[in-house]
Image 1 (cartoon, protein in one colour):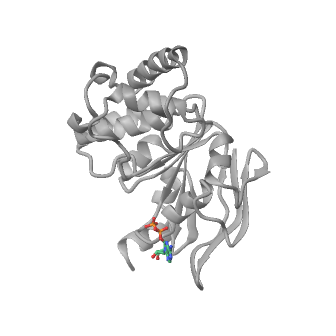
Image 2 (image 1 turned 180 degrees about the horizontal axis):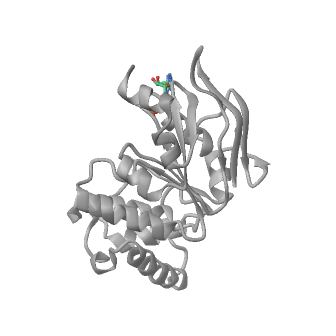
Image 3 (image 1 turned 45 degrees about the horizontal axis):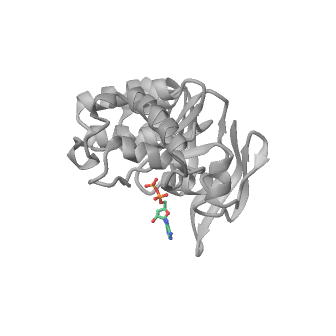
Length: 243
Ligand code: ADP
């Protein structure tokens, strides 16, 4: 589904992502972990076209998407849920879904073009809210949601274009235990029939969700494998705990 070949990003001589080779099979949930500054966000920005690589390839189902525009990549079935919220406090949950469904790329919001289209979006919007456990809140404003519910709404917006590759940037950041467990269940459900790549610092989340894990450090792949493999890897233990 997704493969990177020697993917590299330099920022004026500083290499944030250095010859990274990722290989994520279709239908898998893959975690990217690593300390701050490891290059996780830069890698996500490369995969979604928000940054162009300095060198290397990004293969999506075999097609090289390196250097393509975010809209083109989104059209090819890649969606990303941001860590920083892009919600309108005064708009209802269903209104968010209606506008997201009207956007062909999921990169922004658009208005619907007919009443018929709107009623279709309303129905699909309710299904998506139901998928993330927010159907009973469809008529309330986003501003009135608790933090964990806002994050769930963001995931439902990322699902609006039915992506085949879903990228989640720290889906459980800042959450309490209950919301973390709810998010784990939600991501498991959202992963059915699609491939997921996520970044998270919470090892309980990584262990519960990930079929495979890549550990990055200073822009390079330090280790990869199953959660148990990387957890017991001497280099990973040293990187996290020091010598
Ligand atoms: P992570 O998400 O793993 O914390 P980042 O991808 O944000 O790591 O950053 C990796 C490194 O690249 C950091 O040292 C960061 O300062 C640097 N970096 C990120 N974006 C830029 C940029 N636009 N210009 C220069 N350096 C950058």
